[in-house]
Image 1 (tube, rainbow, N blue to C red):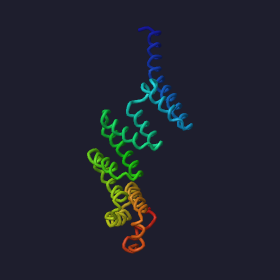
Image 2: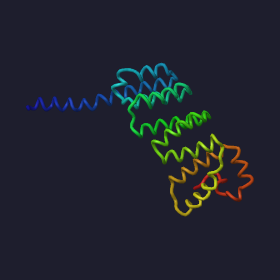
Image 3: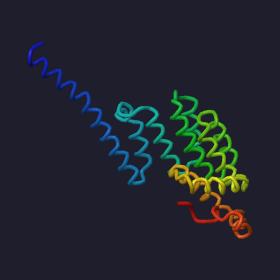
Image 4: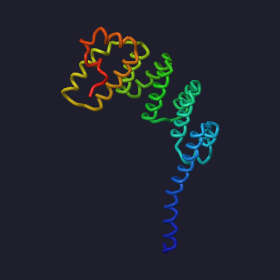
Length: 204
């Protein structure tokens, strides 16, 4: 192989890395512009373009399509998109976890108890640890249960002796959900001496 051939091969290899990067940047710029102008017709047109399809993996494209439906608050389209991704795409386990988590919080926010519960059960099969955390949130926000308060009070006491930033954040999130319920506010007025730590703003 002569010098010219080696040089040509080097250029081809270099372009094989450079061109996809430039294409992705171009597509992302157009998507960002469409969102900034609140032009979802243009957004979906770019997303479904040939350049987009060769620039981004299928899961990435369909996931940001889901993001657009959530942003638009198109509930039926969100349901259809989740069903499409779950049944028509060959998703990895972590990809399923990602869409189930996003869908769960969307329908929790919509106060759609039945759909949120169905998604929660799907998460159970994919990630038992995440399911446990989400189940507590579901029971607090959808079923108005206060049965976790005693356990949380004990866990906070344990954290005071053994600092764990991750666990602290998890507990603070759950406390935040409790504080959204009227029952928790009433409970704190009556039982603030029994659960002094839970009735604080947050733990540190």
